[in-house]
Image 1 (tube, rainbow, N blue to C red):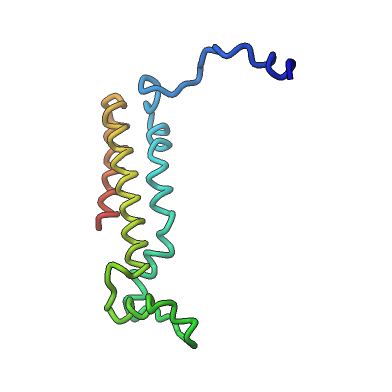
Image 2 (cartoon, rainbow, N blue to C red; image 1 turned 180 degrees about the vertical axis):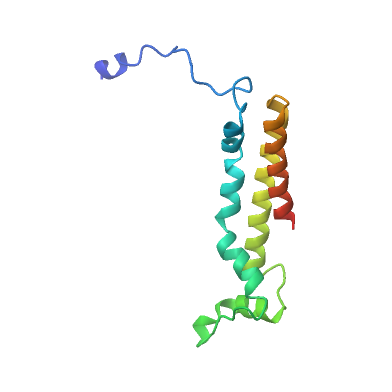
Length: 138
């Protein structure tokens, strides 16, 4: 035990790789990496929730039900018949998904607006983020 505790005696090591507003984000590639969480949250539930809300509510796709255990609380039939409410699980999942995208985008826009130096990379990065937020609102 004495050997284990004696190994951690140098705890005041100077940090040399800290990302501060003075050094990050400055370039186009850094703005691209700083906006990564927005694109990750956008792709998280797009292919499932968005599909069911857009396609199952039209004649484009119909989910067959064969027996009582396939009905699944009528959540698919409600979409197809246009009788859903806020209690439908697909509607709630879509709301949560889009709220997450909007919140992540707003947070990223706020951080970049306050910390990044003015210039074209900042303007382009903010325009991209505002477009992603507008897409989520749409």
